[in-house]
Image (tube, rainbow, N blue to C red; front, side, top):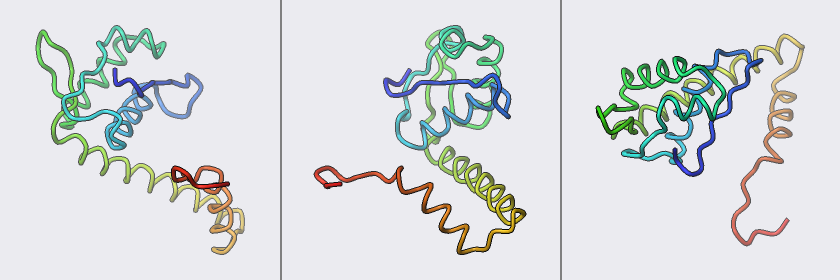
Length: 137
């Protein structure tokens, strides 16, 4: 697996393990953690690492292959496809836009105005801002 990639599955999460794994792989590809040609772990290896059934990982690999994100090389393994970064960036943007949309809907239902929404978003973003090398606190 990519040396900076760790798949974690929350068994109590609001999404099935297969969706959690697929999203994490897509996000890693979109972020450049996994590049085209990178070899992914075997079904069995990832199942052990993520504490899921091997059938779950097999389903994810097949689904991502159908999407054009992964390619299987019989006898050699599963690899990130050449077209994967663009596909994954599009999928990431769709998913995050949907999540933000749901958050905005919840905030609006709670009576927040646009100014308050922006303040909450900025407050959540502030501790996560990336600092440039050499930048002082």
